[in-house]
Image 1 (cartoon, rainbow, N blue to C red):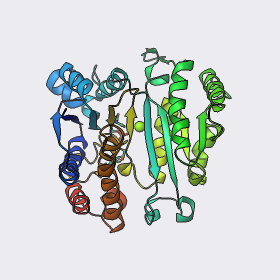
Image 2: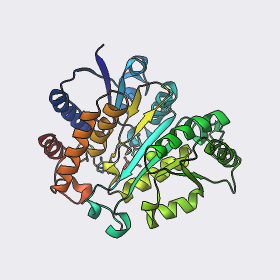
Image 3: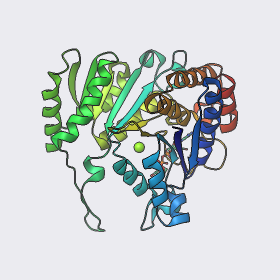
Image 4: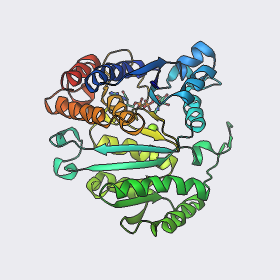
Amino acid sequence: MTTKIVFLPGDGVGPEVIGAAEAVLAKVSEQEGFSYAAEHHAFGGAAIDSHGDPFPTETRAACLAADAVILGAVGGPKWAGGSVRPEQGLLAMRSELGTFANLRPATIMPGLEALSPLRPERVTGCDLLIVRELTGGLYFGDREEGSEAALDTCRYSRDEVERIARIAFDAARGRRGKLTSVDKANVLATSRLWRSVVDDMATDYPDVTLDHMLVDAAAMRLVSAPTDFDVILTENLFGDILSDQASAVAGSIGLAPSASLGSGKGGIFEPIHGSAPDIAGQGKANPVGTILSLAMALRHSLDQEAAAVRIETAVSKALADGHGTFDLGCSDSTKEMTAAICERL
Ligand code: NAI
Ligand code: MG
């Protein structure tokens, strides 16, 4: 059966960075000798404009049938005040595809310590993975909108915590064997449940060293001692915030990839940045986060480990050779950066 890859360019810089990932995929598939069928569908603000719906029926059907979904970004001021928002499409997609596990690596590539805003000696060897719960918590709780008062609710069940914690424990087992579960158990009931479920599971993983950290302390340690972390397990909101912070520690939000996985083989792969309206359409966006997300798709969902490694190596080489976009203090355009990576595949 032909591998089916669905590209959702979305809004803002989304189409620019998706174009970069497609160029890399075209070359690497030739080199590694595999074929695929690519489809493109409207999503987010672009889909509100064309279909009146951020996650139209045909996009939904294509995503459900895909081996992997590669997403650019959605959102922007154009749709901010409307009754339907692009981000609703994002939440609907994650929920309908059942992608409850969001993996966000933050790695300092050897020789590229200078990209970090932190002192090189603080970040040398930094290699951490944030495992963020993606389909529960505050982002999916009951809401009441209001101009004088408003309400968001946070709910987690034991099952929801268990399935994400299992992914984090397994990831830690395959890495350096250290798991830090981040919560706010001194205040939140959901965090106290979270902590007790994770503790219960630790007996299945005697080879993993587990510790718990409050989210405020974790935010501090992420900048004061990022190399202390191996795998960080956390809930939806905390993971959203800490992973942006971790990406900045590793150099730029433009470098950071992510994979959102469910219980099946498919997944959604996207850079962690948003639609970057301030630079959209200028050919300046850093394509690396999206290109590394493609590598994660090839590894996790498409059985193409060699192609994934080839991409990651080419990205490291291009950066080590001094290539980079403006967010890294360099002057390559999106297309020049993509070409530099393709040359090194
Ligand atoms: P953002 O991530 O789009 O931008 C934050 C800053 O990082 C901006 O200064 C931007 O220029 C820069 N940046 C982002 N991506 C970059 C890249 N590839 N290369 C170089 N610089 C880059 O976050 P912001 O501005 O808070 O949100 C803009 C819109 O994106 C909002 O509508 C938001 O809801 C949406 N959003 C969408 C996400 C998604 O599609 N998964 C995730 C985060 C935000
Ligand atoms: Mg975010």
